[in-house]
Amino acid sequence: MEKKLILVTNDDGIAAPGLHALVEVASRFGQVYIVAPDSPQSAQGHAITIAEPLRLRQVDMFDEHEAWECSGTPVDCVKLARHVVLKGRKPDLCVSGINHGSNASINIIYSGTLSAAMEASLEGIPSIGFSLLDYSWDADFSAAQHYARILIEWVLCGGLSGCNLLNVNVPKLPLSEIAGMRICRQARGRWEEDFMEGRDPRGEPYYWLTGRFVCEDDGPDTDVGALMRGYVSVVPTGHDLTVHGAIEPLRELEQVQAKISR
Amino acid sequence: MEKKLILVTNDDGIAAPGLHALVEVASRFGQVYIVAPDSPQSAQGHAITIAEPLRLRQVDMFDEHEAWECSGTPVDCVKLARHVVLKGRKPDLCVSGINHGSNASINIIYSGTLSAAMEASLEGIPSIGFSLLDYSWDADFSAAQHYARILIEWVLCGGLSGCNLLNVNVPKLPLSEIAGMRICRQARGRWEEDFMEGRDPRGEPYYWLTGRFVCEDDGPDTDVGALMRGYVSVVPTGHDLTVHGAIEPLRELEQVQAKISR
View 1 (cartoon, each protein chain N blue to C red):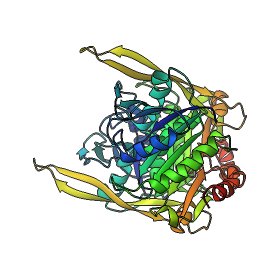
View 2: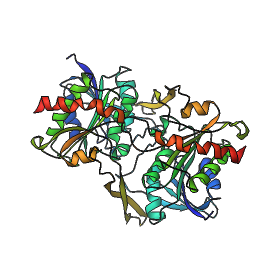
View 3: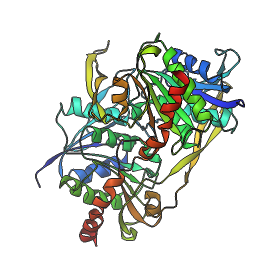
């Protein structure tokens, strides 16, 4: 296969082992550029930095691969990669991760990892977000690397159809115990929040967000379901948040409005 | 109508005129609580604050209404409102805005205004995000207030069906020139970015994000199309990013994987 141009990013930051694990895989398939946040940016969602300038600094952490750290969010990294680092060249693929922790179900909307991949996909670049269901810094990424290799090859060979973004989650299992891959839909779920309340050294109150994920969907075809059965979950993902089925029922509102204001 | 519990938030910050305009409307329908960012948080997407504590301070800017400013993102505001300010009580409605600027099309995924409303909708609270297509601080919110009144009444009377989040955008027109309301789908579009490059006082380079919105969808049923024709656009909005139509075509991938690794 011809050498491809591959952009690698993440949200755990330039020093995260998951990023290095993904660079190792991606570099087998093409010329790799790394542009990642200079500090952890988990849960940044699709945030972008508009009120202040961004910094971009070349770093020497990835052997022969050109790598940059950025002061902004994961989405900022993708924008800067395209416009500054690659000077407008369009990558053949953007991969984000490997995230330390799950991005299945509703986590996708909070996730910097997936938002970075989504930003690239909005620019027409086939993109994959990878996450491993293990939050620890010294997680074993070898099974996730195995599936990343398969999926990157598949996407670079033109396998994607009908969408250009995959949300991939890998269970915390040795490779030999993973049951395979399943194409899934995003499970309905939410976070049940709590706040740790405390007082700072000056006696001022603070609130620190915590919580637990609650899956509200026991369908057999969801990402959460597949992961629980030991499969790697692959969700074809887009950007359309419209509830199309609610458009016709709401048409009545157009008439109500006419009654009230005309 | 019985007095309802209404949470009001935004992303432009507690001092934004658009927030005050929305509080004025919402307070006709119920007991209003305001929890908003203490500084502008535009383009924060669905970001949440997990790496540091949040601050919450009661403010005296809304006459008889209880109001709090929060150091976090718009989504943080909704979480803190539920769990600290309202002590677990569930609002009958959450309204966010009125945003200074459009949140039609793909803007929804960058928007703090809509992310705040979406967060409330995830918790089962009927929610509406309002935006006016006028970025100026002294924008005329009277037409937007007129439609906010209609929509808030409609939602509080149980009008929503099949979704619990509306993305409402109002054209920059006098009320008399607005053609009415249209129920729409989110237009396909993206931002074409650019970066202003410069040197700071120490001679270090910086990059400042700028760009322009490009609509890639000329369908007559989109929010962007409705706004261009002088209508208020109302998009029923959810949280499922799955591209359902791409699931079956991708099943082939499950076999490829079996071939390679088994």
